[in-house]
Length: 138
Image 1 (cartoon, one colour):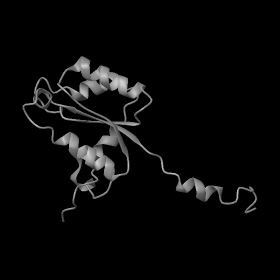
Image 2 (cartoon, one colour):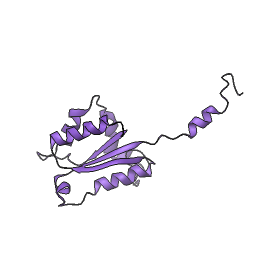
Image 3 (cartoon, one colour):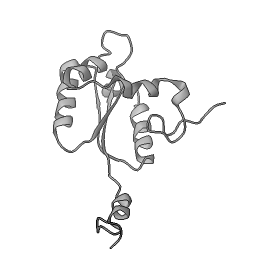
Image 4 (cartoon, helix red, strand yellow):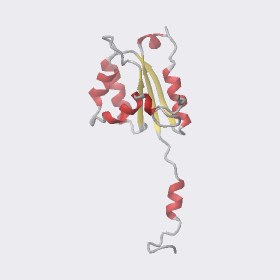
């Protein structure tokens, strides 16, 4: 027995267990959904997620439709099969760019501080959760 707890090497065994984070990736784009333009951001996210050792369990392209996006986001969140949902696209200023609104319709607890570092170039360091594949520029 080691220490006063009698747990021996149990802590070191726990440290070796890695959680497999299950990720859903949703690209929101009318043109990609119609097949008029290839989806570049979805596959880039898949690559970045897999580089972190996480699992992509769902990947889909949907058009900019508030009701459909909200329903899918809620279904994925409630499925118990996805730990993290990443969305890409649908964030411009055109009237149909409604990803933020669709997300806001289904979240229970906003965490705006989580997305801020990803938008700041100073935080785009290699191998970080925000931008795992971004090279650092001097």
